[in-house]
Image (cartoon, rainbow, N blue to C red; front, side, top):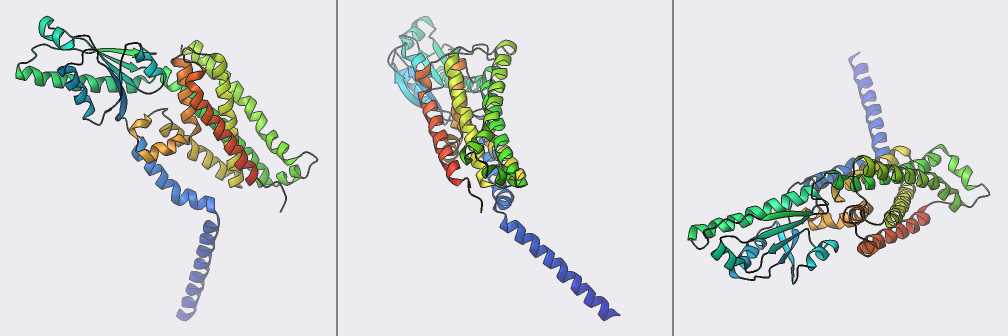
Length: 380
């Protein structure tokens, strides 16, 4: 009896191990599942570890110093020796201040008054103005606070030596968003995220649904060319995205009172290019996976998290390590959000968004070429 029970236990163990090996075999055979199980946690840890950081570092600044005396030079050096600021350029005239912001070169400009040291010694007053880009109010508030603290600390050192017995309070000015309205910052980011989710996620799920059900084969043998069949799956989401774009703009303008200071034409044009890029991204995802669940996971987790963390929507890209910034550069939303802020909030024109528009057009071309090459238009 004992031998019989022992043999039965061994048989059960063999069956159990056979099922375990079979399950491992299915998992290892599915490359998408392996990626989600093993690679995705590492990517999430890196993204959250490095991108989820409210501290602002490496902010690019410019200085306009008509006085050029020993005190102003020492203050500029104090700003440079910490990791909060990088001196990008020295301005030669006050007219260059706004151009520095419009070109996207700097996020803050420090302006010293004429005869700074002389005014301080003889009149007890000298002016420092901190001009920051208010289109991102959180970052603007943080960097102006940092700069004020550093300049005040240097002044306290001078007061202890008895050289300058006067207080200096920097005058803070925020361009483009003087009231520090939060909606000015998050509306462009939400636009980029919503359009990406609708276009990429829904397009990839729609095509993989046809593949999963086996109806894609029926569509491919129809009289219509396979290319037109694929594009027909994307057209409805293109028009739905246009409806969402108009809805977002109407709500932002009339309810949230976010201005459209720049050209509405170029705002629409770059949005159309971005929608096309997102559609081709969804098409590329559909060529990689064969199930709706995999397409949904890649679209939702693989796209939404990078957009939220590395597009500049919530956290400054300048804070991130170099290799994270490289990843951020290949995220379409990063360029779209930056362009929308320039048009809507800063009121800039076509010349200011040439780089963003060129990058998005290039991404669209590369994605559509790769997607069409990888898509199986013939039955196996």
